[in-house]
Amino acid sequence: MSNIHSLHKEPISPPRALVTLLAAGAGFSVASIYYGQPILGAIAADLGALPTTVGLLPMLTQLGYALGILLLAPLADRYSRRRVIVAKAIALTLALAASGLSPGMPALLVASFLVGLFATLAQDFVPAAASVAPPAHRGRIVGTVMTGLLLGILLSRTASGLIGQGLGWRAVYFAAAASVALIGAISWWRLPTFAPGSSLRYGALLASMVLLWRRHGALRSATLSQALLSVGFSAFWSTLALMLHADFGLGTAAAGSFGLAGAAGALAAPWAGRLADRWGATGVARAGAVVAGASFVAMAAGSALPSAAHLALLAVTAIGFDFGVQAALVAHQTLVYGLDAQARSRLNALLFTGIFLGMAAGSALGAWALAHWGWMGVISVAGASALAAFGVHGWPDSARFLPMKAQR
Image (cartoon, rainbow, N blue to C red; front, side):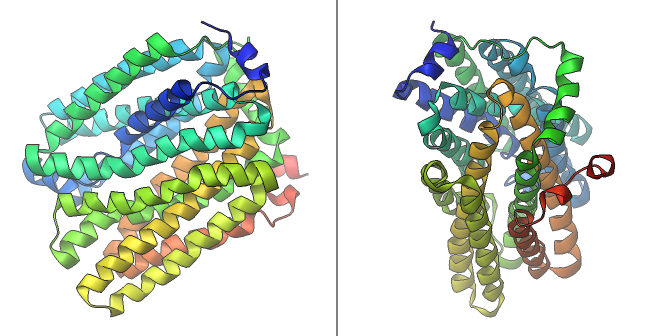
């Protein structure tokens, strides 16, 4: 197998089969943290759980993902990325199988946290794409792999809803475990050897992330902006199934079908990557925030429409805000991966830790807003987060999410 540095120095793009594998690996692994959302009602009914208890499942999964990114994603800068990918695939397979076998809510809550922890496998595939890509095409190739990741996020809900409706919620987790096991096996067979970018010990590797955070203002602004967009993204998707059931009497399959509408937004990824290569990442990121915010404003008009028109508007605006969020994400990744070629996994870990802290906050805020203010409360939270994300890139650098000591 060829060394990754030799691939990186070539002016040509990597083989299409390799890019496809990276995209599929990112998609199937990240999907693991979203399968549970459309089947929450089925889980609650089967295990006799209260809505407040079953609502902890997506939050714990996202918190596990954020912690896993922070603690596990940097390992690929220190060790062979191929070996890290295979080890995480094994661990994720076991966690998903444990979820399907859970006898009650306590076991499922623990298993869900572990699923999130090891689903950070997805964040090993994306920096790999940046490493094999020549600089002139990095945005395009990262965008292609991100298309796979984003389709995994969005289509996971559709697959989960359909499988859960036909075979039960446990079958969703067993199918997910089989898909990750297959990805792990193919990755061991087909991925090239990735030379480590750092010789630091694990503790020093984690400590170096603090230095990277302080050194790169672009990293801080990208992380905060995308985290804010993630608040709205998660608030919408984590409450949609509950709203559709309460307001329209729709089940898990209908809730999952909205993933098809959102999946259209994933088409933004390669487009945004090309624009970032050509015109710069910051402008693309701000444009994505505008599109997301405008979509949430349009969504607010749905309450005055008949039911059929309201559902159609939800689908259209889901396409719009997903398109904006994913365009901003690819732009931010393109910017961050260009900061330090030897620290891409750590830079990616910092970016996605912020994103999934935003996701976890969005799940909590969305549930709270839905309980207190209804669906309009959820939309208000999402719209405000998009507006704030737009404003981040306009702040002076010294004010961008810096520790107070660093500001002095």
